[in-house]
Amino acid sequence: MKHSKGMSALVTCAALAWAFTARADGGVRLPPFERTALANGAEVVIIEKRDTPLVAMTVIVRGGALGDPQGKDGTASLLADLIQKGAGKRDAAQFAEAIESVGGTLSAAAGTEYLQLSASFLARDLGLMVELVADALQRPALKPEEFAKARTLAIQSITAAKDSDPRALISSYGDAWLFRGHPYGRPVGGSESSLAAVSLDDIKRYYADQAGGDRLIIAVVGDVDAATIRHQLDQAFGSWRKAGKSMPAVPAPTRLAGRQVLLVDKPDATQTYFWLGAVGASRTDPARTQQSVVNTAFGGRFTSMLNTELRINSGLTYGAGATFDRGLQPGAFSISSYTQTASTTQAVDLALATLERLRRDGLDAETLASSRNYMLGQFPPTLETNGQLASRLADLMFYGLGRDDVDEYAARVASVDPAAVRSVINQSFPAPADLAIVLIGNAASIRDEVKKYGPVTEMKITDPQFAPPDR
Image 1: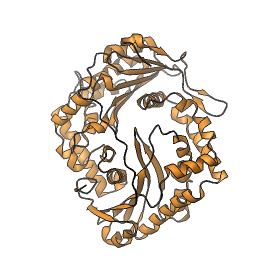
Image 2: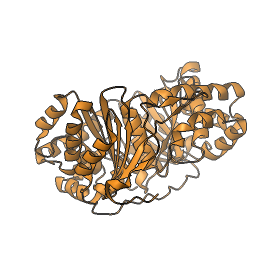
Image 3: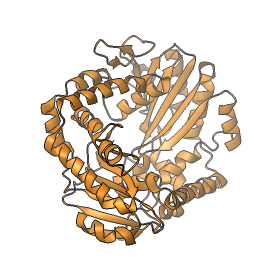
Image 4: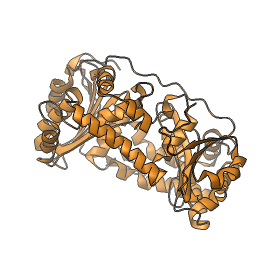
């Protein structure tokens, strides 16, 4: 739909409601909302929800870590840290005090494809919230001393995780191994080596190139008057310049054929952390609901097939699961867990056998019904608060999805039948023979055993990146 310039571009989707409404089938509907486009291309969506005197705002700036300079992964992540450390006329302490003095919250983080800023304030402080968000995005201080602290802390956090519990890093190693050569393989938070290469000038250059009004999505939910907040947003963001460069492209990743194993040597490890991955599905995949129903049963809840086999029945681990990491393009489908060093191959073999059983046998009627019911029960609480609604609206707008992604969720889940299960397993769940495998553990103890999984490449946990240097 085309929008005319400025606030005259308002599109009224329906009369405003106070909260999402329950449906007879157990599902929920988004409240009717209003959309508009500012003169600079920023998209705005508003829900008046007056049940509590609170307002939440989610702002997305398209681009994210995709815009990081080559070899300087973590640039966008550092910028997200810095925009909270002073902006406009306020230094870091004054900015934090302005938020805390009224009981508000404001946070920012980088993702692979966008920066996201989230704020929640009392309705009476709406003007302050808009001011602080506008300052953070358009007038960040980017002070050298704050940059130095943020970069040091980011590097130290990675080093500490490697020294103690690398579970928080296993997906960074997995993505770097599976998607090597593709943007999805670059760590959003950076690596020790890439962060060390980032300068404050790099941050400023990234900001000039990748941040601007044409990249904005703004979602506001809460005790607001739509006309008032539209005017405030137009005043605050409508004249923000466009980003200096075009959006980074995201090519479709190449699917892996065969197995490739990365062994990350952590000599003092008493456990092996493992990640089995393949290219999965995008956020807009037409089969996303069927994939989620199957994966809930396979690896998405405590009673899943994976957790039952690796934790409950065998006692090999305290937990195992599987996830789809969805983006504009298919991200990783991954299985992850950890086990004692001596039981490494037993646990990995069991994970592979469980995946093979899913592909061979599918889901029986009882498991399918249980998975559907679980998802139907878990979904409504994800849309209860103003912040959850604002985040979901921003997500829908970013990925170009309609309100039916929420409104018809229950119907889609309920419609997943055995035929759909069989089809989506064949299409979306990888064969055990076609996986990228990452193992973090004592290489001397497991090196010979893990060769059976495929060609093994080794690196050290102390290496300052998440993939071998020659990759």
